Length: 374
Image 1 (spheres, one colour):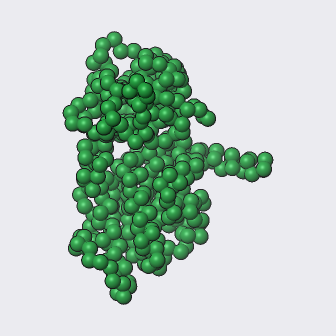
Image 2: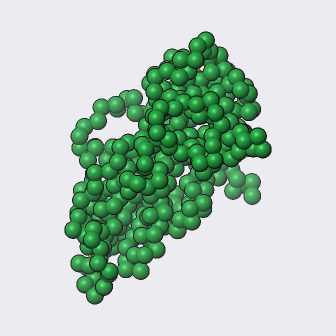
Image 3: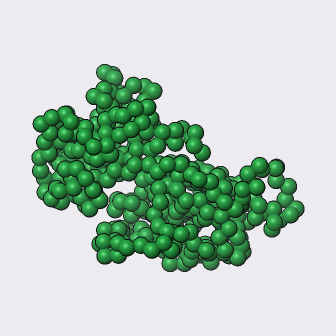
C-alpha cells in the first residue's frame, strides 16, 4: 500500500509540474501566436501520447481510425463546457452502436485540476461514460486551435479528416447533424428520423457572446489592486469609499487581508470585513473557489448589498434560517452563485473563515445559462 501511495503521489506531483510549466512558465516566453494556431485542425489530433484516461486507456487512440469520431476539448471550470458534457454523453449513448467514437480531452485551467480527481468528480457527478483523455500539460491544446471560451469540438470522418467544427459558446448545434450525415453516407441502411438541421451539417453556427472571465491570480489579473500586489505576501486591501470597490466593471476588488498567489487570492481572515467585490452587467455569476486542504469554508454571497432572493439562487447556493445566502466550498471547483438579472450589479463574496482561495469569477452573457441561445 505504501508503494502504491508513493507511485500515486509521484504521478500527482509530475502532473502539477507539467501544468505549471505549460501554463505559467512557457506562455510568457512564447506569447506571440500566429493565425494558424487559432484555426481548427485539418485532421484528427494524435492521442497516442496521452497516458492518463478516464473510462478508457491509451489503446483507444489507435482504435479511432475507421470510425466517425467526435473529439471535444473541455475544462472543468467553464460553465459552457459543463453544459456540453451531457450532450456529448447523449451522442455517445445514441451513436456508439453505429461505430461512432465520442472522446473528451480535459484541459485544466488551474493547477488543482491537473490532478485526475478533478475531472473524475465531474464525470461521476454528470454520469459520463465516454472516454476522457487527461491532458494536464496542455499538449493537445495547440493541435485543436487556440484557447476559446466554451468547448472546442471537432468531428472527423473515418479517415481522420475534420468535416465539422464547433468552437466556443453555443456552437455545438452543427455537430450532430454532420455526424448523422456521416452515418447516412457510411450506413445507407440506417433509417434515422428526418433532421431539419442536416442542411447545415458542415458548418457551425455563429455562437453566443463570450463570458467575462475575471481571474484573481497575480499572473493572470490585468487591472485593479491585485495587479500590483506582491505574490505570496499577505497584505491589507482597503477601500475608504464605496466607489473604490464598485468601480470599473469586470475588475476584482478585494477588501481586508488577502494573500495574492499565482492563480488566485487567498483570504487571511474571515468575516464581513473580508470580501471580494465585482461590478458586472446582467449575466449569471459563477466562481472558481477552493477551501483549505481537507476543510470546508462557508462563503456569504450578496448582490447589491442584499442576500439573494430565492429565484436568484445559483445551483450551489443555499439560504439559512435568516434568509442569508451562502455557498459551502468543500472542494476546489466551479460553483454556480446567482442567476442573471437585467441591469448593473455588484456581487460580494465574504468567507466566514480564513483559507478560502478565489481563483476566478465568471459572468455569463444574459440568456446563456437558461439555454435561450442554444
